[in-house]
Structure formats: C-alpha cells, structure tokens
Amino acid sequence: QPIIIFDKVNKWYGNNFHVLRDIDLTVAKGERIVICGPSGSGKSTLIRCINRLEEHQQGRLVVDGIELADDVKAIDQVRKEVGMVFQQFNLFPHLTVLENLTLSPMWVGKMPKKEAEEKAMHQLNRVRIAEQAEKYPLQLSGGQQQRVAIARALCLKPKIMLFDEPTSALDPEMIKEVLDVMIAMADEGITMLCVTHEMGFAKAVADRVIFMDQGQIVEQNNPHDFFNNP
Ligand code: ADP
Ligand code: ADP
Image 1 (tube, rainbow, N blue to C red):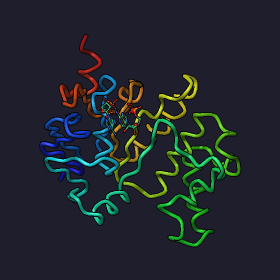
Image 2: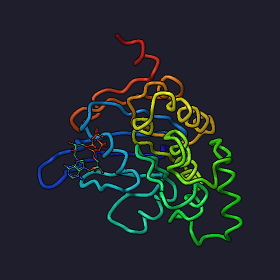
Image 3: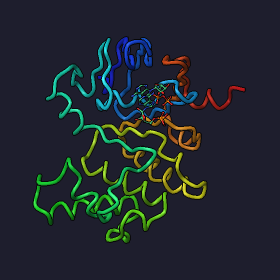
Image 4: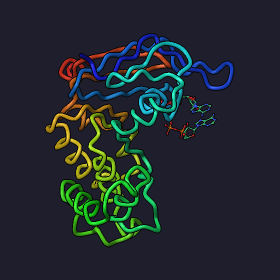
C-alpha cells in the first residue's frame, strides 16, 4: 500500500501557466526520494501539493489514505502527518529555540507546558542541538538553525518529511551536519521527499532520484544507475 499516490496530477498557476503536467508518482512507505531538475521545473510545487501548501486542479492525490480534494478536514489531517523543512529555516526570530518548538502553531495548547518541553528537548537532542535550547535563532549558525527546523517538524511525529532545498542557504561546512541528521532520519524509516541539488544525500540514502523538467517527471533512476550514468 503506497503512502503517496499522484495520479495524472495537473496544476496551473493563474489561467495558463501549466506548472505540473500529468504527474504520476507512487511513493512506498519508508521510501527516500530525491527530486532534482532545473530551477522553475516545478519541484517545489510538486512537494508543496503533498501538504496542500499548493492545490492541484486535476487528477488525484492521495496521502496516507487521505484524498486531497477541496476539503478542509483532509487538509488538517494531512498536515499532521507531513512535516516540512524549507530552504530559509522559517524559525520565529523572537522566540528561543525551545519556544520555536513548544509554541509552534500545530502544537501550542495541545498538552501541558512541561510535557511539551520534554518532548521538544527530546527532538533537540536527536538533532544534537539541545545545548542551544535557550538561544535565539539568529545566535546560531545556519546549519544549527536548519537542525532546529528539522526538530520542530519531527515534534509532530510525521509519517512523511518534505525538504525543499534544505541545504541551499548553508555554507559548505554546514551542509554535512544537516545531511547527517537527514541520513539518521532515513535510517529510522520515515518516508522522505527531498528537493535538492546536493547529491550527497542522494548518494547516501535515496532509493530513487526523480528528474523534473518543465512540469514533468522526465526520468527516474535508482541512485546507483544515476551516478554511474555518464
Ligand atoms: P522549482 O522548485 O523547480 O524551482 P517551482 O515549483 O518553485 O520550481 O516553480 C515552478 C514555476 O512556477 C516557476 O516558473 C515559478 O516562477 C512558478 N511559480 C511558482 N510559484 C508560483 C506562484 N505562486 N504563482 C505563479 N507562478 C509561480
Ligand atoms: P524556489 O526557490 O522554490 O524556486 P522561488 O524563489 O521561485 O521558489 O519562489 C519563492 C516563493 O515565491 C514561493 O513560495 C513561490 O511559490 C512564490 N513564487 C514564485 N514565483 C512566483 C510568481 N511568478 N508569482 C507569485 N509567486 C511566486
């Protein structure tokens, strides 16, 4: 039983910009997929449809058995199952690292403060950033900020994690620390889709590399073939 099904999914921006063209894609539970392709080819739009940050207009999209149609309940449901990490971290600058987790909109008011803090500290430990819990995001390096963003997504115990160029805003020496955290997550069996130009992640853990161009999936390979293809 696949966890994500795109069945002839089409999307337009405005009336005539056809950004996703007949996307057919089936993702197995626990699969790790890297999506690459030129800028503007629709990669970001494709993954943003999965948690309904973008809406498709044609075709079927089913995420963990939830049919993503125009239904608010389905959107709430799916956002509980799908974590997302962005290029620009998207942390609240006026909140501490710990508060960025405990006061995140999906979480706040759902449990006693002490319990939220314990769970948050557990996730911060997982990404090895617990010592920075009382600092503010701008006091951290980019790589540390991105690990906080990952910890925040993990607090919701998502079945699926989406990454939109998670290392593109980082200095080279910080890319590895974020990739190591992602590789550790992959080992725990979370389904992952990652838009990236960073082939380190693909080489280390991807089960499949998808290549997009002009709104279409033009090639799919297992990474072994992909990296050995001249
Ligand atoms: P990629 O992630 O491959 O760079 P995107 O999915 O971000 O591609 O964007 C695909 C195309 O859609 C780009 O040409 C972009 O300018 C356009 N686009 C993205 N978001 C919007 C939007 N909200 N409205 C109109 N056009 C958009
Ligand atoms: P990416 O880094 O994924 O290629 P962009 O830098 O193109 O994304 O876009 C950043 C944000 O602006 C995204 O949320 C995207 O949806 C939106 N966007 C991109 N192109 C357009 C556009 N032509 N009109 C409106 N919004 C857009």
